[in-house]
Image (cartoon, rainbow, N blue to C red; front, side):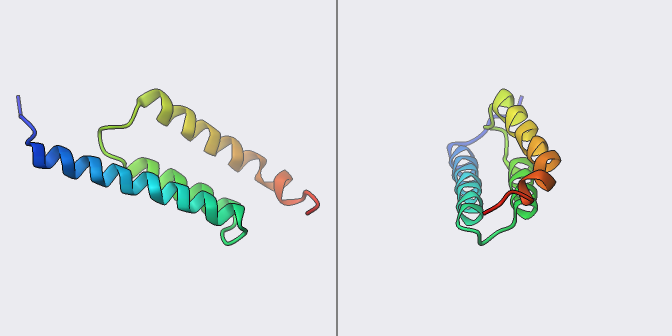
Length: 82
């Protein structure tokens, strides 16, 4: 069995935190209309995929399903009046 050093644990933690911050930035960019919905969804899914092993599987599955739901509904969302 391979033991993970404290340095590696910290590196993984820091990496994961950066990915979560990027997710928040993408959501903020969407909410302030700097990023279109489909690009936001794609970026969020990519950031979820590159997270390393500290992700709660139930949360990740729910997050992914919500992104998929948004993709399906995006044509209807895009046609809503501003």
